[in-house]
Length: 88
Image 1 (cartoon, rainbow, N blue to C red):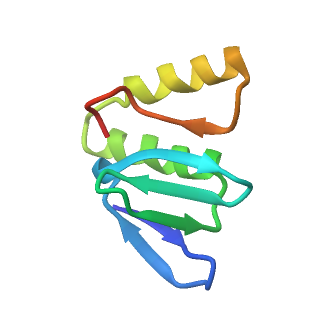
Image 2: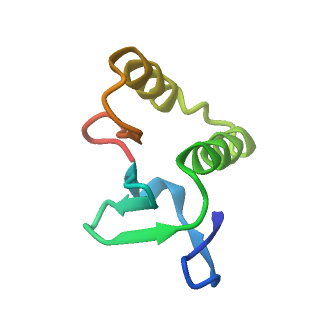
C-alpha cells in the first residue's frame, strides 16, 4: 500500500496495483483502474518513488514505469506517467 495525503490532510492508503496513471494538473491526480480519481498533496515524483519502493519490497521491478518515465522525458509532453495498456 502507498500512504498518501489527500488535499484535506487526511491520510489514505492506496493499492498501487489499482492505479492506472498519474497526472500533475498541477495537483497530483491518481487515476484508478475503475475510473475513480484521487487528488493528493504529494508530487508525481514522490508518488513514483513510493511505487518503486513498493515494487522493490514485493520483489517486482516496475520496468514499465521506468520506460514510461524515459519516454515522457524524451517527448517532454506533460508530467504524467501512464503504464502500458493492460497493466496498472
